[in-house]
Amino acid sequence: MSCGCKTSGDSAHSCGPKKTANGCENVNTCGNSYKLSVFDWLSNINNPAPNRCDFVEVRFKNDRKSFYKNVNNIPLHIGSVITVESSPGHDVGVVSLTGELVKIQMKKKKFSEESALKIYRQANQKDLEVWQEARKKEDGVKLEARKIAQRLGLEMKVTDVEYQGDSSKITFYYTADNRIDFRQLIKDYASAFRTKIDMKQIGFRQEAAKVGGIGSCGRELCCSTWLTDFRSVNTNVARYQQLSINPQKLAGQCGKLKCCLNYELDSYLDALSNFPSSSTTLETEKGKAFCIKIDVFKKKMWFAYVDSSIAWYDFDIDLVKKLISKNKRGEKTLPLEDLKQPETSTHTIDLIQENNVDRFEKKNRGNNRNRNNQSNQNKQNNQQSQGQGQGQKRNRQERQERPERSEKTENPNAQSANQPRPQKQHPQQKTPVEKAVNNSDADKKPQSNNPNKKKFKKKYPPKKDNNA
Image: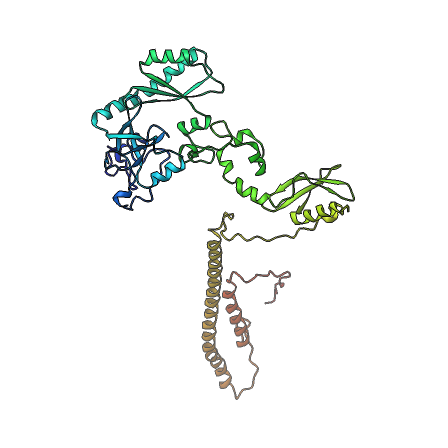
């Protein structure tokens, strides 16, 4: 049985239309939607028949798992729903791991092969119906159990309720700070639910693992996905990592210190093994100095005077070790101001350029500016070349017109060569020199249309001549 998929428990598992935002609808029978799943990296290896492992890992509600022996050699795979031995009656679970990795898991969890129970059969339709009906009652039973415990005035919290596969037993998981007297509580539970009652106390970390949730890192809780062994976490772990003792930031959803504080503890302890003790004091000529702060990554220690702790001075651990050895010889060191070396400014290069907001726009902006400048220069050059071309055409026309005019003016002189009389020039007629000057002025006018050429105004315009 599976959740309706073709390959339950396979790496290409797909829940199809039954997959929702909360997961697969049939989480209890789905091969790939359970917590604390293990990847079987030996699944493609076929071992010889006599060396095959007869044990199978079976999961039940939430994170409860156990190992069972396949006595009847039933062909099983990940996601198979089976009926196993229990006391009393039988229980129904889902196979979570098969093959040689089961032996490794049993050795890791120190599970003895002699205490393993048997697998009866693959679950039939009747077993599945009884099992699913029992699961539907669990939410209502949990609320009723909390009301009964509150009515009796017991300082406990019922976290979860689990029915056995054949509905012959109910297991109540609870958390409490002190010891609880269950004599009256078990009587009330037995009369209310008419089944065998089993009470199991769990810790707050196990409660968070059963309930689940999202941590401050934005990911699903480690205890509900892959973490199985819970180590003790104390405040010294935060002190070794130079973290502020803030319970709101260091505590997880279980109310205890976060398990992830232990992940990098070994690296910090290796780095701190080269540091002098944080309680060291230095004897200087100006007075005693004590350590205020430690930077593990930069390998520096900050010191300040006992009398005036406002000014801090940072030194490398190598220099601090030399100063400590000098104090052991009975010599005082120089004042901290003299020991402090000027810091050299280090120029950092961001190879990835993740800090630049405009890292994708710089090149485009430069190209656009260059293109705009080139287009403006091309326009100006075109305008200048057009103006020069027009001026050259006009000069050519003038040169062609000049000899004709000179001939016309020379003909009357040739006719009157025998009569050397001074000829009077009319004021309206212009000489060829004046015409050439006017033509040159006319040639200059179209060049004044150039936008880049500056225009100068005459400060003193010439006076008009009344006799002209």
